[in-house]
Amino acid sequence: MTDIQPSIQAAQPTTGPTPTVILGAGGWGTALAAMLGHTRPVRLWARREQQAQQLRAQRENPEYLPGIRLPEAVDITNNLNAALAGAEYALLVLPSVGIPHMLAQLPRHLGLVLCAKGLGQQGERLSMAAAQLGFERVAVLSGPNHAEEIGRLLPAATVVASTDTDFARSLQAELMTPSFRVYTSSDVVGVELGGVLKNVVAIAAGLGDGLGLGDNARAAVITRGLREMRGYLLSQGAQEATLYGLSGLGDLVATATSQHSRNRAAGEALARGEQPEIGGKVIEGLRSARLLSDWAKQHSQELPIAQMVSAVADGSVAPKEALTRLMERQAKSEG
Image 1 (cartoon, rainbow, N blue to C red):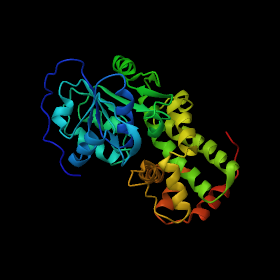
Image 2: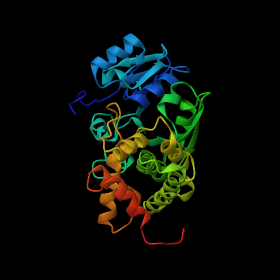
Image 3: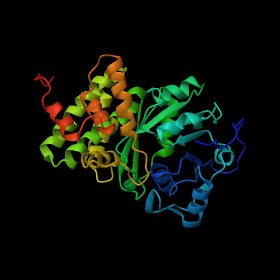
């Protein structure tokens, strides 16, 4: 990725209500801007100048979110300094692979809301990467929030998690709208990792759908996937209750069953023997499956669904063979 802007030393003062800053003009960033722009001023930063110009001219993102109009309260820029002028916090709505590069350019006093559902370069949580760089106010936002519906102002709920209770509550107040209900949590680990693992399970569900295995198989994948999520989340220090909330079970059900889910669609493509290219959009679950599979090997642990998805994605195992291996695993109790 090319350099975006020189490192920012300090935000410039501004007058009037401070806009909500959204860094990233993909589908999710555009949807958040479209929704929040109905209730407050928003600054939407696009990485490419050509995209910023198109968004300003058309007030729509035909590449990632066609048919959703951006309100006039949404100001679009390609200048990172201008986007952050006077900002107290920013929503980072970028693919996980782009987060470290962006973090290196942001002032450390800035509050961060991490909206990517992926892992860092070495499989670390993105909130950990931010904390290691010296950011003190860090939150993660996650839940069953398909951009296609959020942008149309259909009702949805989400969770914003931070160890800084005051920061979480302030974000709750800022981001809540008539169509977007925001809950708070202190379990950053659980909320963040729930968003990571549900993508992997959704790919597995899509594999079953692509092979025509039916509703029973999909239900089994979702249920056992939730169990796999539980084991991993607890091993990382998450609270079990978080698993059964919006960022866990809620997001899993939406992602594994929805027509809008690029991860589920990626699984269907793999089942057909195709490369899962969903309109050029990032499919976080593919990379996460590989990182989780590597973790399982390094720690002599089992993450059978993640390992199966990783093997299918890298071409080492055919989809039907991978699902056969899952079915033939040693018999055990459900607990």
